[in-house]
Image 1 (tube, helix red, strand yellow):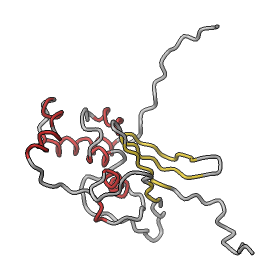
Image 2 (spheres, helix red, strand yellow):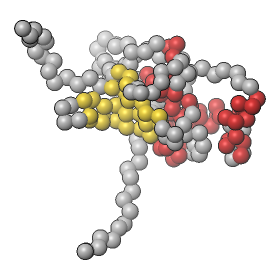
Image 3 (cartoon, helix red, strand yellow):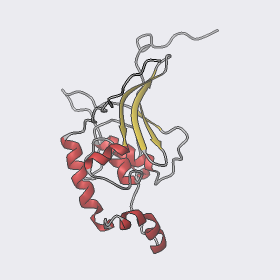
Length: 186
């Protein structure tokens, strides 16, 4: 016999997910919820949108993962607690699919961005990426494209702080421009 004595008032409440996808050339963060017809995307951000904020290189590194949404540059640990008399923070859960969940994964950098941006996501701070000292060969390999472009790795912090202020000023994504196409009749 089946037990049908569940909550009858929660049948149409979606469970929102922060889905982080990392490809070879892009980082995708989206907030979605599931329906029978398919997933509905509430919000979507790509790392290649950082090009309009003067970030030319490094669109798949930790900082680009952090910059993908609206951010808070202070770096303080931020917990989204409900305040009496105000709206609760938007609650969602991290969905990483088949991405590896190691301690320094880029997924957790995007999670830190979302938490700092005001989302209420259950998390543990031990997974947030931290800077580690590397050897010189790995350093040269990691930052070779920046050195070729004439960007010093020591100026990254100032560059990304400027990007964060511009993102906070206007976090909206630009509407895609439609190309003028000539429709031909067959």
